[in-house]
Length: 253
Length: 238
Ligand code: SF4
Ligand code: FES
Image 1: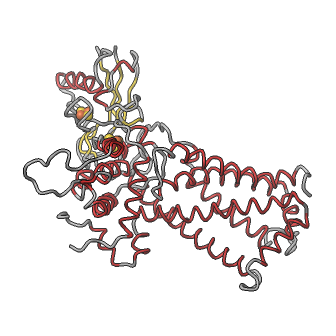
Image 2: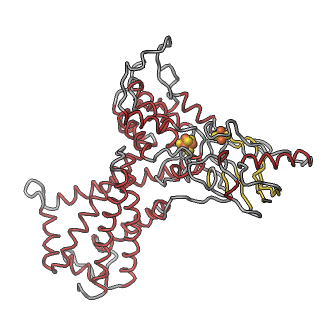
Image 3: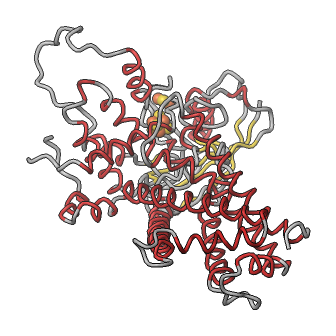
């Protein structure tokens, strides 16, 4: 099939951007969205187009690395729920369709080039507390710390977050609550996460606010576009732990 | 932990309530708590006003009784004034937090998409801010109309029933009341279930019920409130 792609082009971080229309021919329905962009890029390289090929982030192409998110026709990661851009297939489109592709837009995620944004803000939130401090050495005996099944499920649901940033991109407030809540809950509900639970919560939420994200007003757009279906209730857990953390005296350092 | 404290942590020298309010999550908590106060109030206000259907003396007695609560421990009207003070403080905090959070959120999304399709955000969630402004303006008018009487030419202090009837007999006023209460209903619906989130009340088992809970209470309050102008306009009360 032949498609029209309308893609955001921006030469650099401070350069003005604009939408440019392209025709892509010979798309098949079992191509992925990224493969369609590859196809377009091949022709852009051959045709010595002044803007050159379109830059976009990608790595695993199997829905686990969180690199590839773009806004497709106004929905983060495109029309299929619980699906990353790389896992979106062209069978959702018909010959002659026009598809609008834009980068994530958030003050905390500056556009670096075309569809590529800098999600370093997420890395800094993780660095502020998204880990547990343990002495490294030989692996402990696996059954030493029993974890009830519902707790491990809760942790695992949150741990599925791939840091793609769709939640921020889709949020009318540009809030990063879902991401931060997922990263917190993943550790905060497990026994291994308890010693640093409240310090972690305080550090990560403060880091989030310092990065210039907005504030959750419970629209639920994040949950709806999240490729890993992190539940909105995870944000309540962030709030609960932050309230508790703020009631405790900060640990002496 | 070995990691550097983020810059915001420096603010924590302020006493706890102030520093907590200084954070965005803290402001959300304050919005939830003050919203809860407001909700409790509008519910009680609506229920009390149902006495209008029991007749003039019933409603006016109820108004009188509100002044007598707590007497002699409190002076006459003391309870009412304490209640008013709590409500005013709650309202100011609610509006200030909303304003400040909205400002941060606006700054967090400086440029808009050419196109954005909302997947689940609904009318209630998307009108919280402007709906809130309508409700705020309505509160001011409502106080001038039925509490102070400045906006009601036929106002007689103490004659609650007569004042309500006189007010709603002016149809533009009645329509304004209805519209404002619909806005209040939407605001209550989204606010009521959101406060569970802000206060950290979430459990897989009751999460799906939060919206129904909010829907039922928002509906009850709105239906009750809207019935008053309708009753006057249709002559059921008057
Ligand atoms: S919470 Fe979901 S949408 Fe947000 S970064 Fe994680 S995986 Fe992506
Ligand atoms: S490329 Fe890794 S998730 Fe899409």
